[in-house]
Image (cartoon, rainbow, N blue to C red; front, side, top):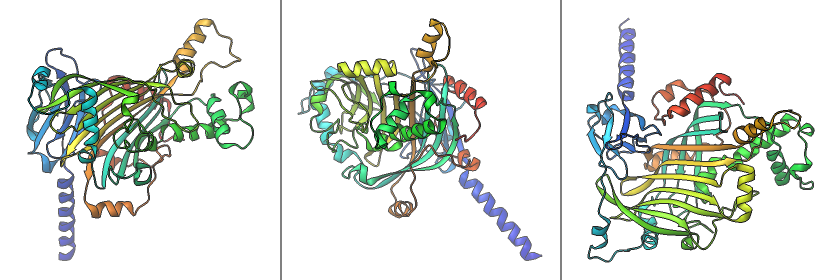
Length: 475
């Protein structure tokens, strides 16, 4: 009886200890521009000297789970061009909005400093590229993060996946295609209501994988194809176009893959881009260059296998720290510029912006680690109006403009960095699977303590509508 009592007591103590260890403080609110009274999107919210953090959504809102052990640490809310807000985690008030004031450095004052420094945007960027080997991680690390993958046309969501992922990287000096791994750990949501009427994917699949003669879209009729054939082609295209390896191992991972063959930010970066110094801002008390990206003498080509993905001009912004030339943020768009790409983009996508990328970095132990990634691209689908439908010209226009054209958005928030060699080795010895499209069981306990990105109000409404019309984990 005594032994049983002792065992019960020990069990209770273990349970209490586990609850204490897993206890977390939730900080959530809205971040607002003090003068304009408008929400601040993509502001950073993090615990000082840790990798625990998140970013605000399009409505300026955020939610962050902070382990109890960091309750006395400093919470920092910052955004480029604003004065930071700082308070102990356990003193943060969830009931009041956070207002940030503008904070701008003087460009004239910076330029007149009597020291040898690059003065033009091109020279500043070249200096930053030289410093990548110093500023980016030079040894192996693992990051834990949250992925939201969504696809929609102009009126509704058609597809949603939310996953927890692990990324291993051996460091800047190694080739990412050989030494970068991705694993999908858990899935929170998986809805798929896409139409399967498009023959574009089937034709692309056939021409890439079949040994018979190449097909043209005009030669294939929907009635000739089974749903199974179309689904197989769609899943193949999902992996080819929207697989995680494209974000991490492709050319659009501009800094990490800058040493690769034909890199966009490689040795010939100035042939494809022009950089103009716009102003100097402040980010959490540090001066930061704001540099405009524009087109140069050559088009930007992505050279995606099996896809005409060339003939672009680059536009956007780079934010580079004044003191160490570390790149804090990239806003990058590829706009159709060549005659062939302009025609293709208008006809197939109804847009000239074919790729939109935002990447922010977090400084941790003097190295810049990926913190947040936003990637948007149009999708070759072409569904909606069927040839046997008798509809008015107005209805045809609605289908063409609202249902026909799709685009995909992928967002990744990293909330943990692991540098311990033993943990990294143990993880590497396990299996790795980067397939975000295969359904997995839902683990409620896991997601209860995992940091995710908040949906915007618009996204939330559309996702709710999607979930009402779909079954969870539908294949």
